Length: 122
Image (cartoon, rainbow, N blue to C red; front, side, top):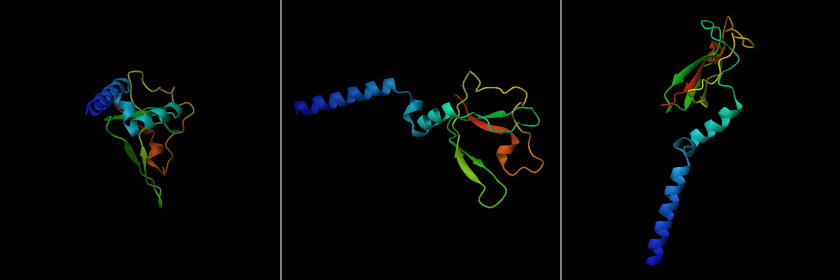
């Protein structure tokens, strides 16, 4: 009986120690994947918003995990994860649309509008 109580106490202390060291963001599966993927990918695509002259970050609630990219044509609509998290240090403002393409006259996908989702910090 003492051994069972000791092992239960030891397991609960280990769980408390793990909970203190791991952040809530890293413990969630999508949060951990999103954090790793965001380190290697840009928060924007290859297009800029014509109204702003640069890609625009649309901040969505931090609980939003996926976005729908609508496309014209058969099988061109897809659901993709939102990897990037908005922080106080803005994810990077491009300079005047250099290196980005404008929205085509006949866009074939919603990613060509230059507006990209980023999860909020709250």
